[in-house]
Amino acid sequence: MQRKLTITVDEKVYEGLHKTIPPRKISKFVEELLRPHVVRPNLESSYAQMAKDKKREEEAMEWAEITFKDIAHETG
Picture 1 (tube, helix red, strand yellow):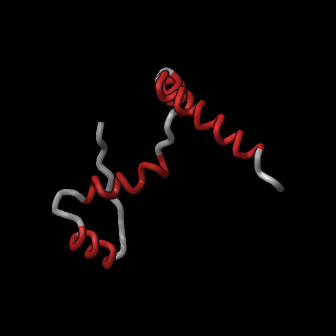
Picture 2 (tube, rainbow, N blue to C red):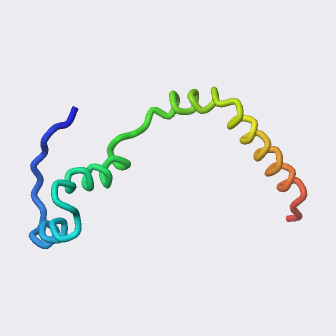
């Protein structure tokens, strides 16, 4: 569901938006900028979904094993 929001911005920001963003696209532009800062993903369900992907899990395990072997051979 979408909701309407009225915001106040500096005149130069307003003019810049209208010069830079295509007509009727400002809302989408603003939403895409804000989303990562205000909408937190449900990491637990995302990780559970990723774990169901067997091919991805095999590749991740292979990468982890190679990384650990590399670390073991480093001299400090």
